[in-house]
Amino acid sequence: MAGGGDALDLAAIDAKAELTAEEKAALVMSLKNKLEGLVAQHTDVLESLAPKFRKRVDVLRDIQSKHDELEAKFIEERAALEAKYQKLYEPLYSKRYEIVSGMVEVDDITKSEDETPTEQKEKGVPDFWLNAMKNNEILAEEIRKRDEEALKYLKNITWCRIDDPKGFKIEFSFDTNNPFFKNSVLTKTYHMIDEEEPILEKAIGTEIEWYPGKCLTQKVLQKKPKEGSKDTKPIIKTKDCESFFNFFNPPQVPDDDKEIDEDMAEQLQDQMEQDYDIGSTIRDKIIPHAVSWFTGGSR
Amino acid sequence: MAGGGDALDLAAIDAKAELTAEEKAALVMSLKNKLEGLVAQHTDVLESLAPKFRKRVDVLRDIQSKHDELEAKFIEERAALEAKYQKLYEPLYSKRYEIVSGMVEVDDITKSEDETPTEQKEKGVPDFWLNAMKNNEILAEEIRKRDEEALKYLKNITWCRIDDPKGFKIEFSFDTNNPFFKNSVLTKTYHMIDEEEPILEKAIGTEIEWYPGKCLTQKVLQKKPKEGSKDTKPIIKTKDCESFFNFFNPPQVPDDDKEIDEDMAEQLQDQMEQDYDIGSTIRDKIIPHAVSWFTGGSR
Image (cartoon, rainbow over all chains, first blue to last red):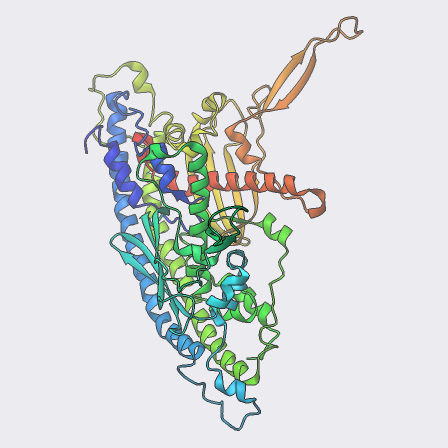
């Protein structure tokens, strides 16, 4: 190992091989990194050391390398463990989907039951995902009254890891008879710079193909033309409005840092954190425990 | 499984068996929970369902139970994996400590080296932990100039999980010739309500036994007595001041919520988050990668 000058490389290795960030408090954002610069704070400690100390530090570095090799194995094994269990959950999620969407009927329901004709026509569990999400505090804040009509057509939510670039993707499947938009699947993808930390690079959502007059993320305002105006037609303006479906149009980090000032950067970072919070709530809470959320509000 | 009414129990089970919170963004604080109340948002979804739907939901609940059993196993296996690697790191940390503190000399250093007498007297790697911490942005902000003299005597930092209550403990070992305080070990313990989430319950630090006139967390102010006053002795007042060692006197959550208003609660939550951030930085970054931090500032 060289006596100095490789500190930057070491830093790069360490960033990848970060130990358990399971309880990591802060979500470090790409924006913050961009603004603060990615240069490691090299302090030339080594260069200023006497030869004796330098030799001790060289031995310490060998110890650190051995640690980092072990740690890389740990991270690998942990990822494999997670993947193993995701596979085990898969058939349970499929079964849940079949019952919720009404593709499959549960065994002990027969025609002889005391039911009204309306119930017999209704398949599955209506409004399952809408109610599961509404019982979660973070998501409840995002869902407007107007959104609920469209979210009734939501029939499944799934997620998977993506590898290149690293991150994860959430898929929302909608019934094809949904009168609000054409898409049968809306996705939200998070690209992570560092999955351990985690550092979000960017979020990408499906562009929603709203049917005419059905857009939930914009409101149409009709204004009467000014009195005495030649044109007698009302002026039609659209205005962005709050909606759960804005989740599919996440905040974007500008390519050029110079485009934004500090206040804007802070605001953008807050928005990105909130957006990530919604995504990870859906992934870590709603999808694995949807039934508990539906029945009474899990935590 | 009962048709309803057990939603609260389900919620309790789910809170424990939360899936991978590795990339969890927000640190949910005990304070927030206290203020918002711990009552699950039960929405009586089940009671309002027709019998047919209720049967489907019962089947869904069985599926959820199967999922939660698997998930509990996953969490157990992941904890075992982490413990296995912590054991593997242990001898490397010990070796590091021996070299840093000068208990053991590295092999290829001999008396024949071109060294000054001062160097020969200096054992180990001086200021190792101080410099490792100073190269981390979060910790650098906490370390005042005044603190550095005392942190030179810091000879090791270790951590371990604690089980009852759940959480972790960080130990700072100081040289016994440290002229600032009597304690040879300062500890900081974090009690977690939920390790997966994570929800911090409280933090506890060692009370530091400062030697007279050596306290770094208070400043002594000498004021001249007012002119014409009978007493001619200067008035001595102490004032709290910023110091890394305030880390061992963490913010306390009052037992009675009514003691604090909303602004105070928010301020306290910020302080607790910052305190937890410092603790988890030391545990997850400094301890595993101390050499990389020392040599050039890991990330």
